[in-house]
Length: 279
Ligand code: PDD
Image 1 (cartoon, protein in one colour):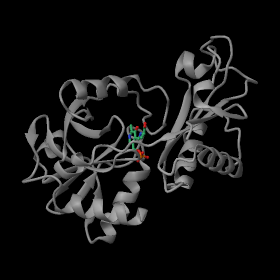
Image 2: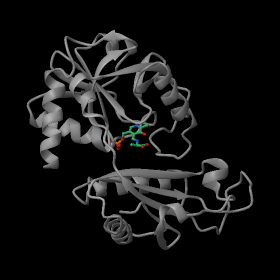
Image 3: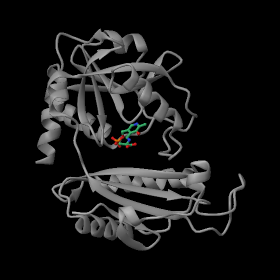
Image 4: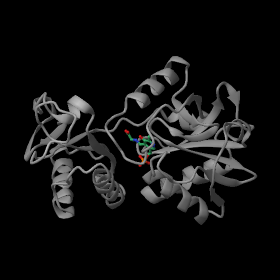
């Protein structure tokens, strides 16, 4: 079962896929991406991911070279060529290959890369016990709703989390919780699920939206409103949401225990309902 790549109109084994060193994605991080989970051979919330891909590209003026139908056909072919039932599909569009110049290249075709790899889910024990997270200052730019491949701040913050024995770093800006390096964050207080509102400072997570819906369906009140770092540390429950982790309970923030035990009752309900929509 091979890892598959699609690069500029051709499918090939991932190990043979190449792009130019002059690609602006490589030179400048000048590109956008999506990561989509495949369950039982089917991409999860594909339309929402395509919507966000188009939105990201549009907001940084990168032309999207394919129609919806073509993306759908390409991803479906890539998934079936890989034959992984549980997989992650990565789609990247960069502004293309051109001699290095900060000024936007014109008449340069964008580079499209699609890869499909087997998904290795996080250790199930983490869902049973909850994970450690740490808070870090948000040093990123002010357009984090664009899913840009420029991820240096995220990479450094994630490594800082690992170095501090945690699985995720939560960005905090001006005292307010923003999101994780690869996840959105929600807290529970008095059985109300609260997550920071959408806006330019955070990614509108596909999983975040699903979680808000399933929580409401399960009778949990939800609020999209600012969460301070102090709220985070003193809430009844904390959870992370994201394509690769689904719904992951948090046991400790900066070493401080959250609630009586993780996962707490609301997080358990949301985890359960999330699993059910996958079934
Ligand atoms: N990232 N916030 C950030 C900064 C992210 O990078 C991600 C996901 C999320 C969650 O979004 P979603 O629920 O749509 O996956 C929030 C992917 C998994 C990644 O970069 O690999």
